[in-house]
Amino acid sequence: MLIVGNWKMNGSIAMASDFLGWFTGHWHGSRGVDIGLCPPLVYISQFEQTLRGSTIKVGGQNIATELEGPFTGEVSSRMLKDLGCQMVLIGHSERRVNFRENNDIVAEKYRRAYAADLTPILCVGETSDHRNAGSTLDVISEQIYAVKNLVGEHALCAGVIAYEPVWAIGSGVAASPKQAQEVHLSIRDLLGPRGKHTQIIYGGSLNRDNAKALFTEQDIDGGLVGGASLHAEHFLEIIRQAEFA
Ligand code: PGA
Image (cartoon, helix red, strand yellow):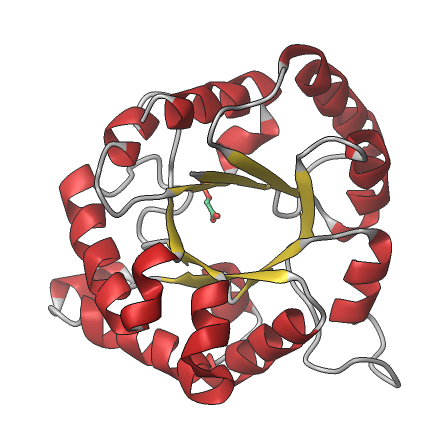
């Protein structure tokens, strides 16, 4: 199982310090659960320094398609690696929608992450319009195939896939375990034979109350946690649910 916290554009130095203090004081290792935390870029060093030597991985929320040069405001895969990051979110729906990242851009970012030895967490998912129109799997297969066509099955399956229905993100209403399992299974089929062992995690209003039922499903290998990851206690409770799944 894998549980990753995505702080999005939230927090402060003080909040990060409180979170890390509480978390490191209460978390005493997890059986069978890998943990990742993706704070805003400016707090990554603070996280990395506090968590260094533990098994908790620190990650970024985005990278540039380029490695260096005249790209004001951008940060590259190599720079995240330099900071001690081990993973990075790729193609989160907030980037796809608000920053117009299309499937080609997302695939290029995936390629950069993989080449820099960062584990890419590829986010895919449908909007409510897509779901209502019955095109959930069409949308997700386009998102997956754009990456697969560029980097190949081996690199795709070496990463992590996060199924995040756009309608569930930040809405307070997660997909039902049955809805999520159905899509996770289809994603596993899309990955190909190597995808048997690829971690496919669920995200979208995941919290300490609904985590257990979701994690019990066969093809749900953990979670990408937004809002609930800002509360150290909630985040730890979600990790505990994964331990017992
Ligand atoms: P949420 O966000 O848990 O706040 O719904 C999840 C995500 O967008 O990764």
